[in-house]
View 1: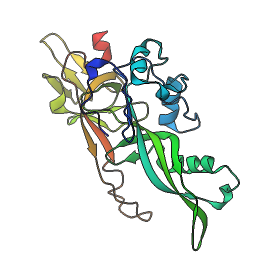
View 2 (view 1 turned 60 degrees about the horizontal axis):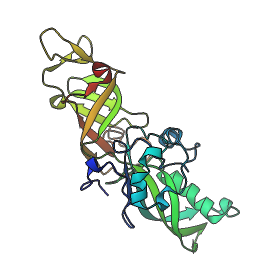
View 3 (view 1 turned 90 degrees about the horizontal axis):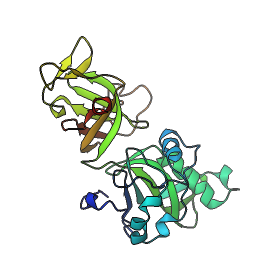
View 4 (view 1 turned 90 degrees about the vertical axis):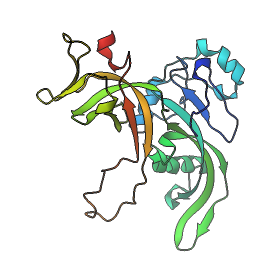
Length: 275
């Protein structure tokens, strides 16, 4: 689900009924705990967001009007990201050695192994499993000692929308443009034609230089903190991995999910310029 049709000027949290997703935009609210149940043992994205969020229980049970009125007391800033809760259905394989555990615990563990920190095509980067909505009875398959369970669940997905302003760090500068990274995501590219008018690449400095006037040189250099605007999302269909040693040239060439960004208006560019 995308964010088209949302009125950003309202500065409200919108709770959209099933089967749609719950949408939260970090620029619309200062404090919100979407992910208070995320395990700190998950890998980088989940750990990063978990540490940024304070506990706030049962917030989704509140009516949307109450949410809007309660913005002043929401507890913690979610940095630089948009998160959605998305419904997904899958058939989960539960291995025999986990049969002694509670079913929901085993299902959640297997779902996190499969989805956490992975890209779902046309959706975004999955951070973690939020909850289980439906768990069917287990099925057995001939020749396999595991049990298979149909599950409908909600997962937390990171998906900035077109027009959102984010802050990251410059990872690399080339004549083609600037590569930007976040704490947990690094497939962001600002093409040369999406930079400020008057920007030039300096081969000696391996950096971009913006010259707003004849006497000023402002550098866009590696490791500088940069503010940019999301212009386009790019999803790519990635072929299944072949045997080791095959298709070496094609591996990791095209990311499954990338962002095209711009840096052309006041307030964009190196954060230090505007401080």
